[in-house]
Amino acid sequence: MNTPAHLILYSHDTFGLGHIRRNRKIARSLVECFPGLRASIITGSGLSGEYASHPRIDYIEIDQVEKLPDGQYRSANPEKTFSQAIEDRKAAISDFIRSNPADIFVADKEPLGLGGELTDALTHLKAAGTTLVLGLRDVLDEIETLRKEWQKKGIFDAIDGLYDHIWIYGSEDFYNPLAGIGLPQSVLNRCSYTGYLYQSHPEFEKVPVAGLPEEYVLVTAGGGGDGGFLMNAVLGAYESGTGVPCPAVLLLGPYTDQEHEKEIRARANQIGDIRVIGFNSEPEALIRHAKAVIGMCGYNTFCEVIARDKRVLFVPRQTPRMEQLIRAERAKDLGLCETVRAKDATNPEGFAKHITALVESADMPPRPHELDSSGLQRICYKVGAILDLQNRPELEVERAG
Image (tube, rainbow, N blue to C red):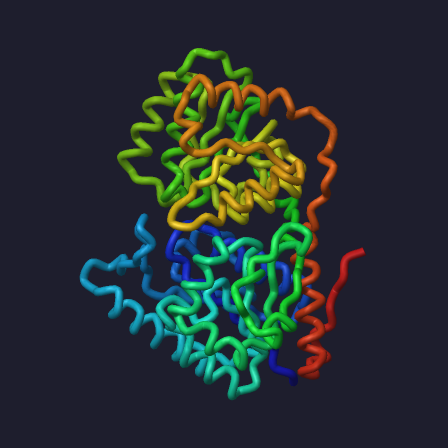
């Protein structure tokens, strides 16, 4: 009897929901595609229990760490230093991969893991014949910033003989996150674009949106830890008395500060045209029913909104990384969205005009540029090819249609 193939996905998860949601999308698509595959997600999020379970997807939670506004890190456990947390995470990862051999290992964004915590595990996996994949979102940061960061972390010295494949979760005609940082051609030859990671799940989209207006603008700040400025800007626009012609639904996220959430709800109650939702692990229904969307341009929001061809206004943050601003401005160049700088959104009357223009554009024809949103399907083909080389005949790809 054949042993089911095992895929491990790693994400360091220090801030927001981006990494765990991205890995969860990939894992779900793959186990649905391969009936004999099981997936394990190593995560530092602490929110895995908020997501719908799957019999062949397991979450392995490691110590949580927090990313501070200046880009530094600290342990979420006040009784541990950051170094102690990293050592404990490193030991937990190594213990798991040694007791649960993997056919494929996918690391999200951090080639050597946070604080180098993957180094020993990757060496072990490489020696065991595991196929190693580095998964990168479409935009990482400004080129010079990324070059300095990877040099400081020793990634240039380690990456050449380490990863078998580098998957870029985006489109070549949109952005190249590695252009100009000085990687050797031998590494660049292993890079391929998957397209953006989006897949409609009807069971989530049909979730009732009871108690919400028939038409609304959805305002989302991802995990919410850095989205307070956006929520304040939207509240200010509705408070300005300029008559925004559509109610708003604010999706705060699980990392919103409790005191700030109280303030937001109090202001929303005074306005009347705003509903507030603390956290929704499956926002597809909210996006589908929205007339338009206002967001910060994080990766997952971008994938979901653009794939749905929703009219969207992005207000990207610029710290601690320029990722969101780069993505938003490139999307605007292609006619995929409108943007407002965070500093300009603090003008209530001016921002209200932008929201009004967004609502009025919601019924316009589709955009001229079509984003490649077939990344999850393409990853299934890539994994199928890897498993074929590993001679796993019991895992034939089930292709829809």
